[in-house]
Image (tube, rainbow, N blue to C red):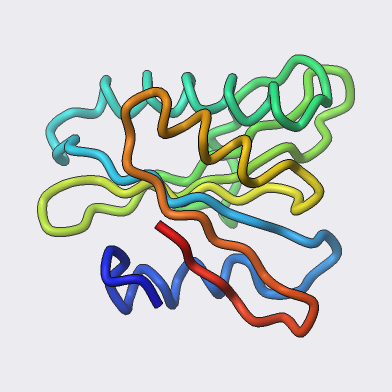
Length: 141
């Protein structure tokens, strides 16, 4: 496990990627945004929606906040396709030591290295999270 990611964040991210109907990969975006910067968190989520959607190649997306869904928690969002509400990504905005880390996960078929590079090119520290063939989670900063 990378020194950048604390144990709780690693555990939560690993749980999100556990095998299900879709093979998932993830990216933890480390920000300097505090709990008082809600508007900035919203803008950042919109920006990353566009980045992840472009890499997914599934067309235009929108952000679903789940306010009407009891299975959603606060600070949990999904990127869904406009055409058919298909899953593109989901994220959790987690406050850690006074600043937010945003854990995004999406279908593993995406080019993980290109996506992580694109996020870094925007000036953010990002940790890549993927599962290997045996189901083990690999974390790389």
